[in-house]
Image 1 (cartoon, rainbow, N blue to C red):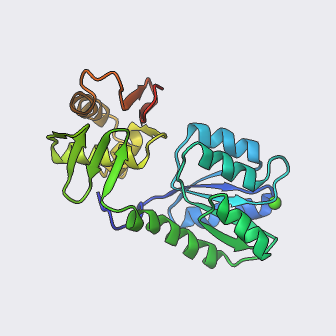
Image 2 (tube, protein in one colour; image 1 turned 120 degrees about the vertical axis):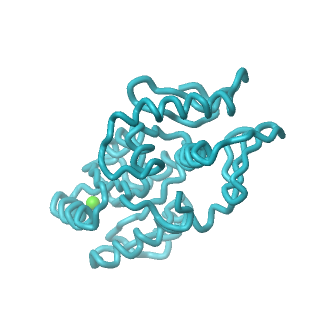
Length: 236
Ligand code: CA
């Protein structure tokens, strides 16, 4: 995995109630090769985020039901570290502070130029990779992404290079659903869906799980039947 570069095809959620803005942002980002999902309300966004993974959320502050701040707090309370770029017509210092304190990563006042949104989004997609350091952890499992070694409860775990790649990916998306399609694209680097890889992926995950979880009661790698996998401290 390329640790120093952002995802090649980022998945982004745009939460915006104004249809025209929503459509033009979606179109612009799709033209950049991004995978775009949209929500027209706070509830819709929360519903989407409960089931799907994404690399960035562009979140309008003023929404008809729950406002953007509510959505943001909800996300952070659940431990989701997905970068969030807040959009707002309000540009007072108080608002900005409130948004940042609630866990927004950046802030863009309307009206804005699409080029600026793109530049800031790209910066956010790069940032976690640069600032996350060499270690990723979940419970008592720790992965050193530079040395490419894993330790669970003080015990070193011998992993193949592919297993390290998968483990790193699961850890970066922990708490979120990781589908075989995501692994195929981002770990196996297959630009197109290649379903005969599914079996290979399942076997690799099974081996990885044997090494990471083994007979432990506190499983970290969970299978979501027919959907994919999720890394986390709790049962699915
Ligand atoms: Ca709005």
